[in-house]
Length: 328
Ligand code: DP6
Image (cartoon, rainbow, N blue to C red; front, side):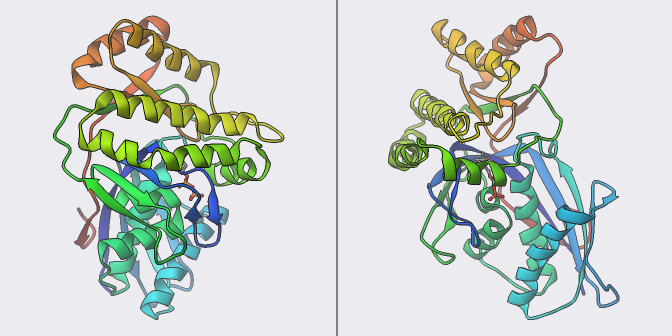
């Protein structure tokens, strides 16, 4: 069968997804809103081959075994059942994202896999169907089907829970300056973390209610290019999400002293008139929602506080691309 290659870019949530109403089908408790990024992406080639007795998954040149390859095979089973085939597949994936460091590599990984695997299996899915399929691999992947600002409407079941684009071509000054305070794999993955928090934090429901109440205000801030409103809501939402983790039982925390140094630096810079806000996911790295015009000043302050820290500036990026063959 023909090989297909897909490229999907990762996305960072401005309003977060942090908990599942239905863990089997990955139906979230909140509607989330994200920005797809240009600089971080995954390229994945899939070819179904009758000569294979099991799926073969190669990530960044290494053959996956155990839990990671099972997760891919389970996802491929969904594609196989949709396409009514039982053939095993060869999957080759290259991640242009620091894996498992809180830069949401599973979002681009499962969006690219959904694109390449569905086409390689002979399916011609719509973007809505691709978003629903990617969601089954990893919730945040549903949003990486589209570029720019994207909203994953939580829905109530598999048919109704998928992402839609808010603004695909972002033509105003907004960027995410990622501060890589630690690029080691995180200890508690997002799947386990959100499940534990949802089950044990007394503040969990308040976080859900607050997040869902921000859907329309966040849509408006995006439509109005209101950077300050967007940044304030995104930072508050991220901090509230992390507060559910520190109030879980037992508590856990993705944020380190270095993360807090960056979060406080953003607050200090705001006092000095620079519009910059922090958002953090299931890891210690901090993404600074900022404007290109302020990059030099932000970088200079960071260097004073943390001379060895690595930063990556990421701008709004495109949606899923799928091509025939092994090269994109
Ligand atoms: C903190 O999509 O990785 O990045 O659906 O269990 O695979 P699973 O979780 P995942 O969770 C992402 C959580 C987050 C917030 C977000 O991206 O909305």
